[in-house]
Image (cartoon, rainbow, N blue to C red; front, top):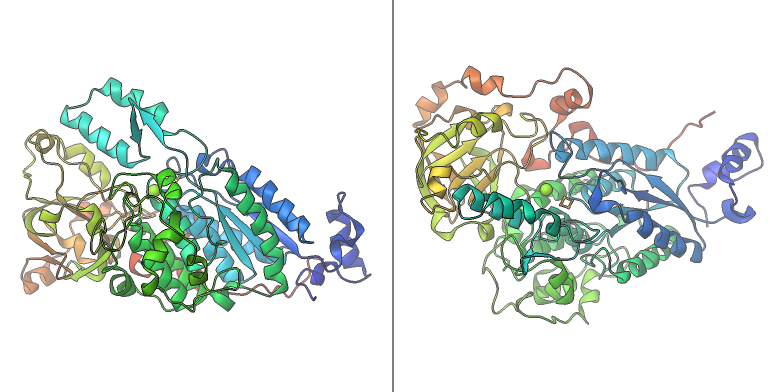
Length: 570
Ligand code: FES
Ligand code: MG
């Protein structure tokens, strides 16, 4: 078998000597002759607590690689901890993808196992691997176990949003709120709701990039290590078969991912991530494909934030394959996985063990639950809403805009008793797109005004050019494109304008006459709130980031360069 790594290690000349000599470190003599060099791109980090256990997972991958005759090589890559990284982990997704891409290409490897978990880590790894196009397979780190507080399960994120609203409404004491903190995170692993991390793990499997049956296995479950071991073996097989992303990922693979996203009631964040991954592969995926393929798919999984249960329950109930079996007729039967076999082949023996958690097709949680794509004069290039997480009575709504130019502006004024806002108002937050913030943070699910919470209001229409956490809920229109900072009409909205939302008709409109709107310019205060970084990654990002409707990748990172490196290092 001819290996890419032979370019470094084969032969008796000075350069081959140098490449081998420094890499010996105890490996056998035959490590450099015909044995696939398998990188383990590892996002383990103490600053990404959701991924900290991946070092143990990497050990199981290594065992599998060795067993199959390969040489495992751990490669620590940029890691992003969702809850702490400022100003938002999304600002660094493309940087992580770029750094990982370059290190995979620059090194003497033949294939890679990608270890991710926390929200941005699997997307950045898949973007990188797609652009390098070496055999690549993901091991998702898995969700944490269910924590309980006062006898009640606590879902990561979702219950925290809920409890903090209860404090603001005066129905929960601050002391009890803080007491729940240590109960939320029960074990290793990523968020246990159907947030972005769970969603991306499942979507990666539906896409075909994970050993089928692995995603959703809880992080502390020994079956995760077993799957990691099997994935190590598989990576060696993939090199032998030259099974690169470009050889098996197709439009049909993405269609399957969109069906899975809808059926599990997954995060809106998956839309930007899938668009970005498709962009790296040169696959023509558009925002409208999400609506066309996904919006009529029933939500079958009763998990927070759309429903009640958590990932441990989901795994116990049969996991992703059981869900996909219910919607098998909607899947592309030709789409392949890392195994070289069609995804649908994995569905033959995939029973549902708990029909409360994974509903039958005949009794879905939400009949048409996928993500809806809205257009109108307020979002010419599109905006998203997740109807399953919204209030049915607000899906068709007209209301007066209450506009905020930044999250700081919002925080300063939202609880002002004199703020002119009522339950019918539409709260608008702008300056939170990829360029404006920068990085498109998860702020779109704005907290409601205290005075309305006290009246029992629990949801309002919100419109934003940012994102929201996959664990959040509410009638939130988000990813508005173009964003205010990129010349989008969102910058022109004034407090008091009427905004109309009609999810059934897929419309989001500003009811301002066309000529009046054309004559408006953004307020200086609106423009002043847009980011204008002086140097570094932020400058590069703001100058090159694309809008949400095409995946918010950097323009010069779209596409692939393959794995070739012509020049020697010395
Ligand atoms: Fe890491 Fe939620 S914070 S997955
Ligand atoms: Mg998040």
